[in-house]
Length: 70
Image (cartoon, rainbow, N blue to C red; front, side, top):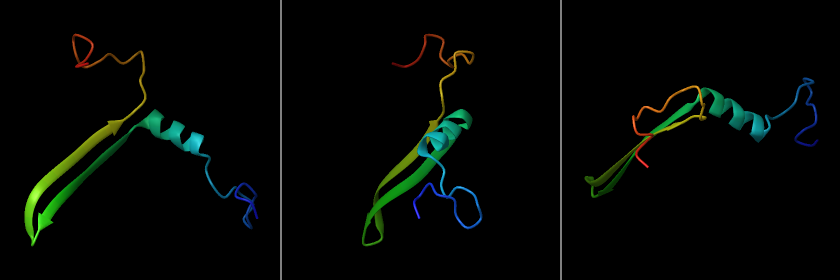
């Protein structure tokens, strides 16, 4: 049975990556996580990641007055 073939329930098995990416960018997604590097249970370095992935829309203005930090 191939990945695209209908299964025993009659529906497709997977979601194409393009459709998944389109749905994620249309609604947006937040990624956050922490990484702690420790030796002998003594934390030495902590890294925090907080990211927002979303599509760009011309109707939504930039939050910066001058167009952005770049």
